[in-house]
Image (cartoon, rainbow, N blue to C red; front, side):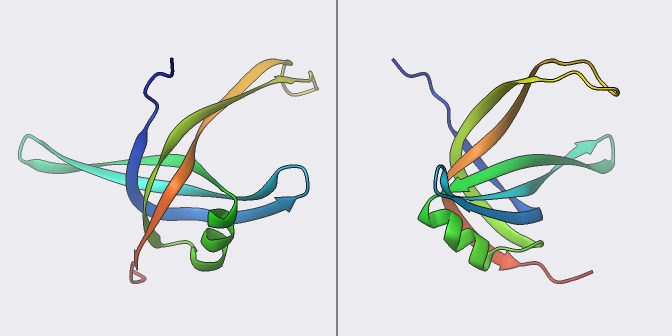
Length: 117
């Protein structure tokens, strides 16, 4: 039985996209999505920014690479994925287990590009 793993986010492309097309893995496009949350704290309006790593695969990755750039608004629907690996020891940090969670986007909706400030 699968557990629920679903993500719906809307925000602005902060970094990327970075496109990769390899025979082993196929096409993929990675970018960073920044999502702003506004809330009241007393009489003040506060802003909280969150940054999310997003990966798009296949034909949709090719479309994202062609049409997305920094500052574009997007809405994505996808799932969380965790990669795990063993890091080697070096002069700067200890080796050992590492992991990273990112969003695998299955649907990307393009929004208007924000004007430059």
